[in-house]
Length: 381
Length: 179
Ligand code: SF4
Image (cartoon, rainbow over all chains, first blue to last red; front, side, top):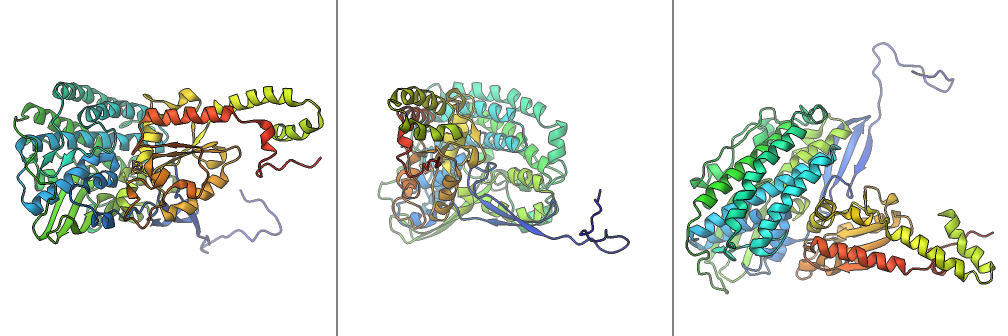
């Protein structure tokens, strides 16, 4: 209701357009909904977002430059820190790229162990997504549930390589150590423990009316736009494309396992969430199969400490939990790479945010941003 | 905290006010040390361990009366969890200045202490958060285990318990109201 007062302009009537003024809201760099630092500059028209400009670089740690000053073995610890939520996958990508460059054959047992670790880490990463996504939308319980399960995965990793977050487990040509004796039985126990838990999350969230209201139909990303912005990983699959490097360009031992690629239909926030939930089940399936067929044998090919790959270049990509992760290495034949280019999924996925967020309310941007599952060190590197 | 800030002013006028100060110290420090509300501010890898894992049910900050706050205005403790780059340094300082007194800082992980793995050959990382804000407790590790960050919090509580109200008037930050 308008209050009549002499200073107020006449209420607009008829076909005259209502004039509104745009204003700029700054979100971040310190914002509780990210565990990294990213600033979003929002141009608003009332509650509605007109334009989003992400301001990145708050976590630029010059990792690509550091790579030029480290040997191939030494650089492994930095790959952990590029994608700390799924360090195993980041390790894996680096190993695959260097092995391709030097033509190293990896023993079968090592490949299986890599797959097991990468998939367990994928589950852990999606659990972190679930925890932070739910807490952004105001549901605190799933956070505690997800971290309860994640601790069990972390225990498995700790048993194997002694670290809780930055594992540094894989080595060029294999893995650093064999798994301890009770790892196989413990992991099997974990897998059978996980399925009912995932059902539990679904019972809390998937059909929850509040959750549906916050996610269903919000932040649409149609398939052509997704492809044009080179979006990959769950956001791409959420938009409906069945594209997964593990299936389409199998690396490591992935062609030996049987798993499905979940896809969404509408490309909304809910679809991206659902794809990740389904991927957790599929990852557990892969882990179970790999444990069944775990072959005996060596765990590491012979790679000298002063490792010099031949001159040339190599490009290799893998499917990390957030999407495609790729390394492009140029070697000049010395112990250190001449140039390393890292392609990370978060950086490309973040570019689609302005398109997805346009026209939605300011409260929705938290949900849309959360559903992309951005890791800031991956964006800034 | 209005009354508390005036306490040293009154005490100086009362001969033998030391006895009151001691017991007041005990009460204030006890309440402060057991309700450290920390700022939810994580920049990199350490945030997962230091803020999320430790905040979740297995390690549980709540046992020490620590609850996260999303706004620096409500927080007493800043856990600097992760790498601080040169671009971020200015913002960290602003966040620190926005926190209300008394405030404490824990530098968590190699990066916050001295640049960590990014000490050499890196052009963009700040070599230690203590170059921009004062730090009370350092917790080394890359990342530190949740147990060690909890140990760091206990150390900070010990430090707080040794503080004296009568010392406040001597610090520059404390400006007593003229009466
Ligand atoms: S100390 Fe290690 S784990 Fe912590 S932020 Fe730095 S690189 Fe990451």
